[in-house]
Image (cartoon, rainbow, N blue to C red; front, side, top):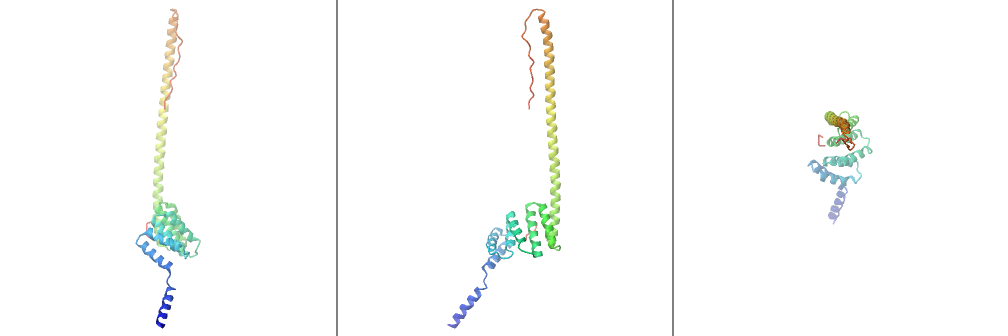
Length: 218
């Protein structure tokens, strides 16, 4: 009887040390390491409901790897208001930077990598990714300048083509008007000649011519 009571007390005692949130977080970590980000995000969301410290960091990071970058950045940014730990803040900015990097928003990635280094100047990964983001940003700006230059050239070519077309139409219109005037003058001379022979002619009319127209897994 005493043994049974002892065993029961031992079970109750051990149960007091079982943390379902911790267990769920460990499972989520295993899924994350296996790159099963969809399932890890689901479990991290359940863990996050416990309001434990730093749960938003894991959730945000998993969501970014899942491809839900904006949502992941939201959870990571939320963590910034919950801590004064400089190393932790550096990690948060670093992962936000990674999110923006994955999204191709290199200017924002650069900004967050710099913030990461402000709180932890020795963070090697942040330095490395900052250099990569700066290179990408430079390439993007260079490509944008090329695209803008090409667009400006295309616009100018189009404008010159339209101008040339309008000038040609204007020239054709003037030529037809001149031809009309010449015909009218010739006709008047003919009328004068016919008048001498007492021949009545209908009055002539001018014809108007109208123109036509990260890099890293964390």
